[in-house]
Length: 147
Image (tube, rainbow, N blue to C red; front, side, top):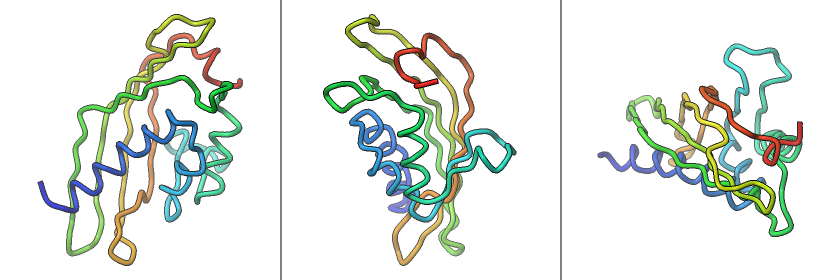
């Protein structure tokens, strides 16, 4: 695996780790030069661009508990990365499985899906350019989401 592909893969994993830590500022930082599409080809209100808007999206949607975390574990698998070194761009995909356990909710899978990502190199550093989230299966998200 190339150094660039490894750096991009680490971005994918950092996203999951920061969400599970309740570090929405850190998640937003990953999108300093990018955006999240909540819905593929969705209306403008489903696009969250830049660090501040991505942080706001998570603050608006995700419930945090007394320990400052959402009490989740995002498992990211089947990560694929394709890099065009000359263009400074990359494409990737991954599966996700989110588990949650709260005092009121026994440990269980609450949602599974896929990410479709693009990346770009800015001043020698790889960043998310875009992330589109696809939901494939949904369980009990009432202890995770605010809506």
